Image (tube, rainbow, N blue to C red; front, side, top):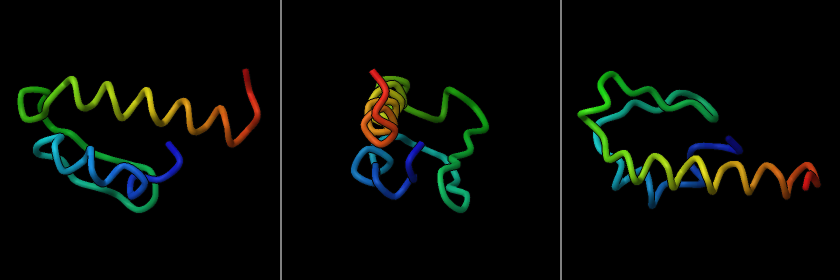
Length: 56
């Protein structure tokens, strides 16, 4: 992940989590979060990392 703060709009919709320094988000129980939002964060993060490192 290129930095949790880059996805603040999605994190606001995620549910209960804790943010670490940098790129880490911590989730205790999947029931506490919106799985669809987590999937969206993952997809966007992978796309951003591919752009950053010029990977196809």
